[in-house]
Length: 174
Image 1 (spheres, rainbow, N blue to C red):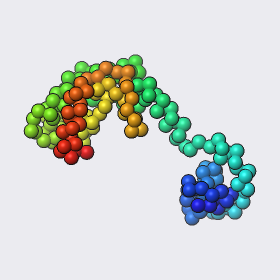
Image 2: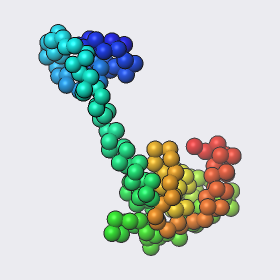
Image 3: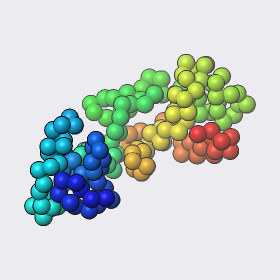
């Protein structure tokens, strides 16, 4: 699609109002329709914007790259999950960490529904599923669909975690 302000052709051009704009023109474009029309009518040569285009980093991309770097060093990207606490910027097993192993064990051993286990431990079914799928419990960090070694202590064994993942998959639980 062609930018209606500078003429730059790209598949990444975004629509604002009724016009398509390249990422550079889009970033500087006003939000109200009247100002946007005036802005688009002030044509500019695409070549003038090449310097901006060359160094333009999409919004949020720097932050995401920083978060990936942090995750790759083993740091958690969110709050401490159930069974862990935040101590001096790092996660460590909390007083209730044994309940996590209990939940994993109950799910594997019993023919009890997720709902029953969730009720017993005072979670929603979705909350329980998040616990059962959380790589943090085996000392890993999952971020941006990548899995990194964490710097924290695991609460359960990788074997137990993998057996639970197999059962979740067998039962079609997502």
